[in-house]
Amino acid sequence: MNPTDTLETAVADLEALESAGRGALEGAGDPGELEAARIEFLGQKQGRLKTAQERLKTLEPAARRAYGQRFNQVKTTLESLLESARVRLASRGQALEGIDVTLPGVPPVLGHRHPLTQTTEELTEIFGRFGFAVARGPEVEDLWHNFDALNIPQNHPARDPLDNYYLAPPGGVESLHEHGLWAMLRSQTSTVQIRVMENQPPPVRVIAIGRVYRPDTVDATHSFMFHQIEGLMVQKGVTMADLKSVLSLFARAYLGEDVRIRFRPSFFPFTEPSVEVDMVWHGKARWVEMGGAGMVDPNVLRSVGYDPEDVSGFAFGLGIERLCMRRHGIDDIRLLYQNDVDFLRQF
Ligand code: FA5
Image (tube, rainbow, N blue to C red):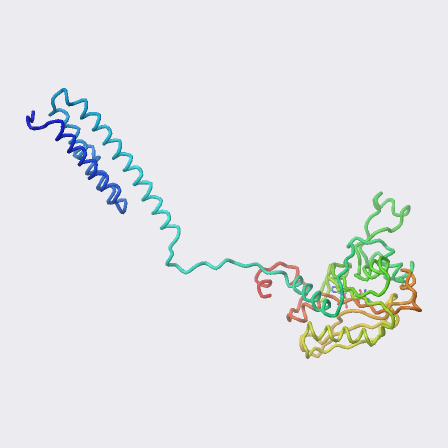
């Protein structure tokens, strides 16, 4: 027994040990330093706490209880300091592994609007400047709006089931003879002309943009589903000269000042006279049809309750895919539907 070892000096040493241990554990800057501090203070074989525990035996029996209690407190404190230091260093390690602030950043990948969506928005904006409002109509249409009201008689070849997508009647195909043909996927946006005029008196100045469906053979310029932009202007004194001006202004605004378009006489049951509008394709000596147009037939004006003696109007219907292709130099309409990201990324 060490006669000079009193409870006071032993507890004072314990406290010095505690404060040295706290300093080492809290000050450890990396796992290596922490491990060294653990071995020095909490090591099972020669750790300083172990030595302090052994000192218990050197004390007077009466002092042991007080020393033992103090020893246990110091041990608990150092153990919990070790644990917090581990957590602190582990989380710092993760943060450093996860984010290296010296690396150049990864730019976020931005999506694109589809070129047809961009075209639609641009056309809406151009015609908006010319004073045309936007109208809409359904893609599943009745035969009145797709044909009858557009002056397309019952026996007209445009109604041929081979040229249109008709819907089976509610009772199934077997009940066709009973119900007759009743609804279809619209084959043209001219249906919206009728819907607009049925619902408002003149003057009218609208465009309608949307999908149309035809069982056409697919090739570089034809698809079985495509988009059209319909235009309609009806008021007092509208002439063919207005139609030509609006379409020429539009073509220059969308396709560029140097675009060449031409008007060819044509026939549509719902316009008289009628024209087809062509544009020069990608600067080559080749004309491609952009759309049809004409002066709204008096029969159509009458079918919606307008007075052809009082008002006149023009209408046009243009293929949106072809406009988009001409604008961006796209050679094949199918590219617009394949969702090939490398292709779409260019727009
Ligand atoms: C019509 O659809 C008429 N409704 C246009 C019209 C409106 C005339 C108002 C008079 C007054 P057409 O069938 O020609 O016309 O089609 C118009 C345009 O749609 C074509 O010039 C072409 O650009 C585009 N188009 C036609 N069929 C297809 C197809 N299968 N794939 C892609 N575009 C097509």
